[in-house]
Image (tube, rainbow, N blue to C red):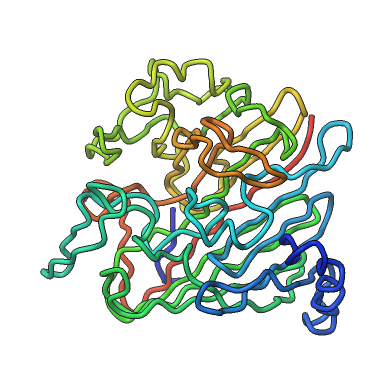
Length: 383
């Protein structure tokens, strides 16, 4: 469970691509001599803010992260035959991320997931948020953490190359109270892990629920296959049922005997037809069995075709498993690939959705003098 304190792009146009790359890749000395870490220009936002793309290499994996939205742009990992491919959905250039898309790779906040009807009461005061997922608020609102440029700095870490990204959200942004300072540190370890560590402080009590929204397809970026053949294991004997707007009812129900039982490795497509409704599929919060707040096993995904394995460990009490139900071919991503329904899956380590309205859910309010922390690790291997 979260600890509350105590304790590249497309390199411009093809004509200029090579020259741009040679000119803007920063030398190691400019990155604090952090081995395995480099950066390059990733373009500019519509209002002229420069965006950087950091590359972290260690072990067998390479991860690229943009300062726009503190976004995981790509993760390259080998399959069982040693073939390296990108196992995430997204875009080849910044332009795609500036447009409309379903949070590919983004850091989401202040409050990941949904808040019912975009309203809540805290310390006797009523707050109203933007309704960007009618009738609810989703992933922080219209301009959540996924739509801002973060400040980045290299970090000397014994675990591997690291970059820390920081953003200060002003009091009242998107309707949330308090000035909140957030940092997200990305580290790639020699054990083929992407480690994501979050910290936040505030000067007023505020809801908080930070997470990462990377879409995975272990078949690789050149694959047109869905994730329905991927086998999923979740360390969760309970989940939070939802209403028809995907807001939790408040119940914490057992998964046994239901289509959401992944306590044993099961192909994602095995029972997905039983998930009726529009658009159909999984988009549910699972209450993880580990309740200590220590880093613990949360989920495992295995692709029988490539032999790739993704294992997630987290300090969070929940994980949102999303099977890419709303991918509809609208987004044309990397290498011109059209992202269709079930072409990617998300494992969003989090507090429970809409916690602000459910006293029986783990606390997700950060107060002055406290420090929010969260750690989630995605480990890649083969078998």
